[in-house]
Length: 342
Image (cartoon, rainbow, N blue to C red; front, side):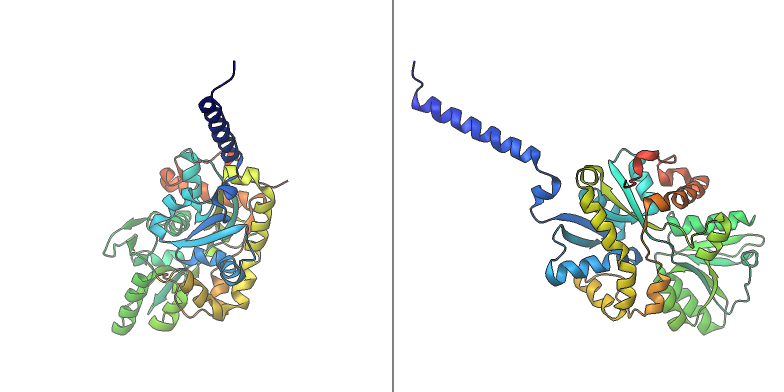
């Protein structure tokens, strides 16, 4: 019996829809986007880890496999990181996301610490000299905070949060960002008072110039002494990727890591252009400052692949967990987090 024309047409439509469905399922994430993979980085010093990528895409689109690098507000990075294919995030956030069931892989550490303790009208020489003093600090509940607390604990120094100095303790007063620390230092300098603050580059260099501050401690050096590591500093920001993308396109991951590894040299060799690149990508960036080569070097933007960074990363997570385990998702992540290329 012959099929009616309507039945034939209906069968063809069903077959076409099925074929399209199969094609969509077979597409990789990149093919679905048609314009390359996406990456997000948080505003602030971690954004420096991708300056050369932003510049390359903007100038000629030569890095076509990566379609977009977007700078986002630091407060939004946890959400936006899960929407993108790749992301630069605070080191503890990567562990937290993984422990909460997110299918991500840690590809590398990209910022190896850029924290300094500065002072004005201060005679502080050792961490123990901070006892009885008030210290202004950035990063409450984040990596800078946990690093500073760990170093105080290691010296047996009692500390607490507050707004007034307390005998026998270090009192930490948290401020929103580096400008908050700098304003406290500048006011103290003007009035002839002592002030001390934990601050990150590039804000630290601004504080040298604008507030007359001096460096009391390099926290990267103190951390190296604390851990006994051969590496200067600690993993402050890391590169993560969606597990599905990482596993399906290892060739691109290798290319991305190579390009980001070249970024440290790029930003110091092109220090005069860093401002323009960042402001063009994100007009509201907090990094719109006149960068000098020395400042960029102190930002410590150096990519270390997971195979070489894992031990230092775990050591830092252990230190954080000793203060607040929930900051890393309640436990050390298992080996499924770590991407180690063969």
